[in-house]
Length: 78
Image (cartoon, rainbow, N blue to C red; front, side, top):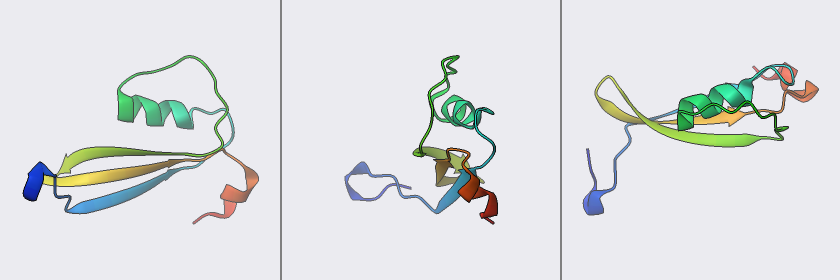
């Protein structure tokens, strides 16, 4: 569905956090999904947030993907 001015109306916003040890491929998975490309180069991540618009059950939805650094403080996130 579109709002005035051709802006997409999103029915849902889903938030996803990628958690795991350092250098296991969290950023690679996020970039592959969001940008449809894969890079073999390693770049250390502090924290990134990616957004992707998708259709779920015929409704416009938005994903917010939090790409963490794999630091100890995220081990307790539930």
